[in-house]
Every structure is written in structure tokens, then in C-alpha cells.
Image (tube, rainbow, N blue to C red; front, side, top):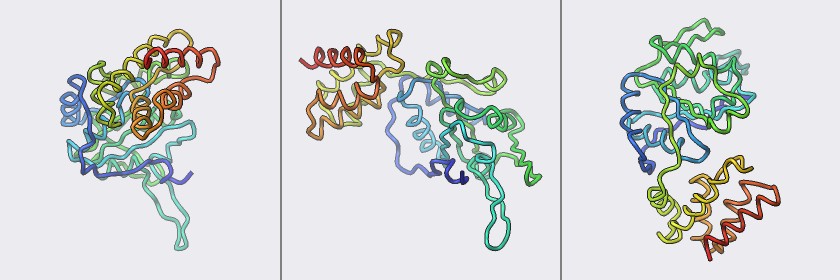
Length: 271
């Protein structure tokens, strides 16, 4: 895999990504950044972790490099590799190395999906050393001012599969993010989808009912992201129940009895 395929993108966030704080997370993150502390964002899928880090990159005026982690992500995808070109062999920095050199915020999304040997390369960047050794070139980089390492994962989902080692977890300041309280979630759904308040309240009420099924056979519960998608479809003219089927019910389950139960909840919510 080419190095550039490992990174979703480096952006200077010029326009403020809209984010509705649910607690003291903004101030806490600002203090972590000022002190060069690595941060772990924990929370369920679609609760706003990525939007939060985009908002903070804008607020702090730092470039943001986002890396989606997966099973095939190797250390060389983060650090870089030698490439053969027409004029010889040249070194190309990976996204993590670029972030270290340029003082960017480096965000590893769903970090536990990466291989353990890949995660180990982060260790020297998460303590007082703030170093990145590049074995292939013999170079050891000191992180530029403004560099910060941020990782995220879904502890509820990952606990059933794999988790971070304690030696890795204790290198991060942990911030627990969750779905916002109903009244705040209504405002978020309204703002992001353009829905009217009454319909947004209905979607949030539906989500609250479905989230109670978390331990009753439903592996994932509806995220705020799914509610926004349903709202956007409804605003575009799609029937509200059909929008809920496409954006909420179908993404959550394929099991017939569960799908039927979810449809019943949709019908009961939007009489």
C-alpha cells in the first residue's frame, strides 16, 4: 500500500467545524495540547469524536492529519519508506512523520484496529521524549512545537474483539465522549440536517428507545450520525418512515426479528 493511501488527509481547518460541547472536553483538550500530552478519545461509533478533533484543530490553529487504522496498517505506512523513482531511490515521509516534522495534530482513528507492532512506534511520542526514531534512515526526530498525538476507539465494540495493552493506554490522557443528552442531540440533529424541531425530537426519542436494546441482541445502537442522515433524507422529501428504515434500521441489523422490532419502534414513534 502506498504511503499516501494510509492517510485520509492533511488539512488546515480554516472554517470552524460546528461542534456542540457536552461537558468540559474543549478546555481539557486545550490544556493537554498546551502541555504536549497525548489524548485518547473513547466513545461509541458516531458520537462526534472526529468532529470534535476537527473542531479543536481549527480552534488551536493546527494542521490535522487523520489516519484510519486497520489490520494491514504497518509501521512503514505511518513512518515512511524508500521509493524507487526514475532518478533513484528516495525516502518519502509517512503521515505520522510529516505530523512530527510540521507540528500537526495526528489523529489515529480506531487505533486498536492497527497491529500491535505498529502501535509500539507511538510510544516514544507519548512521553517526555516526544521522539520518533526512523530506523530505515537512522534519523531520530524531535517533535516540532504544536505536535500532538490523538487516538480514538470504541471501547464497547472493541472489548469483544481486542483492546489496547495497559502499557499503551497509560500513555494517554483519556477523554470519554458519549451521545449528547437528548435536548442537545435534538439541536445537533436540527443544525446538521435542517429538520424542524418536532421531527428532530422524534428521531432522538426513537434513538433513545433503540439504545435500550444494546444488551438485547443489538451489537451497535443508533449514532447521532445516523439520526442526521435520516433527517437529511426527510428534509430532501423522502418519507420519514422510509428515511428511518434506510438510515437507521438497515445499518443496525439484518436479523429479521430485530429488524421487525426496530420497524415497530419507528411506527410507534411516528404515529
